[in-house]
Length: 503
Ligand SMILES: C[S@@+](CC[C@H](N)C(=O)[O-])C[C@H]1O[C@@H](n2cnc3c(N)ncnc32)[C@H](O)[C@@H]1O
Image 1: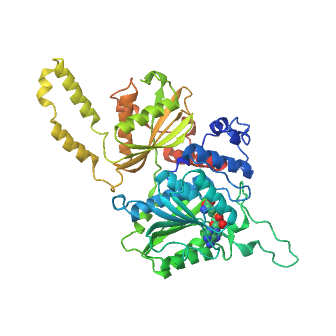
Image 2: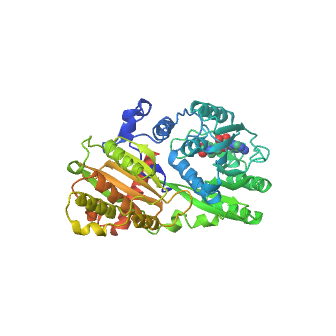
Image 3: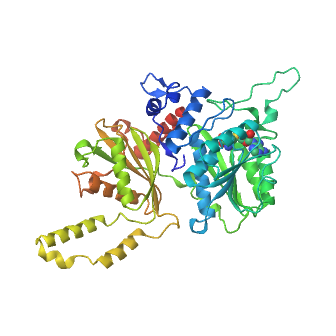
């Protein structure tokens, strides 16, 4: 999973069932007591996608019954990688807006919808299938995104050339191509019966033209590479998703033969489903190979372990309601006071996730600031006169703050992280707050500092005691596995499996 994917933690099905009647009718209680759905039932999977789009992205979508159902974790993995590519290829300081091309919009132009809603990006989205095209148009209108998304009905034998404007420099192209070779579905002899198309493992309702094409995905991507040569000056980064591992090597060979300036790959893991992304550019000023070192597989020998704090009722300073919703609301207030941008990514009653982005370090040296404040108040009340002359000069403190904030990773942000607040899985009477490092700052330590900051402001009893923040460890019953990191990985796997069952 991409570290910014909000579905790194699975959705709360019980909450979805309580909130949305259209989902409730598909929800079933399992023997374990948990709420789930039948993932082989397309109607249930369709209901899940539509309610998640509504709840987490404020998007109203109706999916036709006989077309591919986009599953959100996978689509977000690809889109978040595109966000990374755009950041590498078109720095924030140089851009006024971002315009991408989505080849094959599908039934609700899912990538364009999410990209427009999340980032206010502009899209030109093409589609060859009549039902998908008209359904996408209705979706864009329903969500008031006509300014951001232009849909084009195109001929199935065309991809980019002839379909896009050559007066614009687009930031990227993206594409989830039909993976299969249409000939694999045909009868081998006249006497043989034509087999049913292989639909996605669960909840499949796709039509054959959505998932299969002559020559399969390698032929499709070959045509895309040929088109990219023609349009090399019109697009900063070309990309495609790949559905079969075996397709990667022929596609890479084609890119090398074509003489692209650089290319990069990524893996998209979502439960047991694996997909890949390949991106290339003809521009010498865009170094896509730099992004390869950020490939999660190469980068993470250690898992990203969040810092955790248990909020107990008696340490909750606010006399507001002691609930996940209220704790998260107060944390968001604090982060906003620190001049951070906060994006709510998941809004459940028993679990909430928010992404924060800091442009600079506004949280460190808080202890020194508190000491200075205390000194000031002591001074005012006549106590501890000796320390008056040691009060730090404001100017010096400012310089230190700048040093503490360190170099900017790029112009767009200094640090990104996630805050997750949920009913503690280990302690029924507590609410757990996790702060997860994603990118930038002084690595994970920055998120520990932020958690300290939050603790000092929101929870009374253990102020000034940094030791009470813990790195999250799994419950002791799992200790017999090989060490914490492995156990953590195991948890991630369990989570992913739960997610896989869910999506
Ligand atoms: C696997 S689906 C992906 C749909 C959507 N992007 C998603 O991820 O859910 C492929 C889509 O590409 C469309 N398609 C196939 N050939 C195309 C072409 N030459 N130009 C535009 N769309 C095409 C299909 O109709 C189908 O909607």
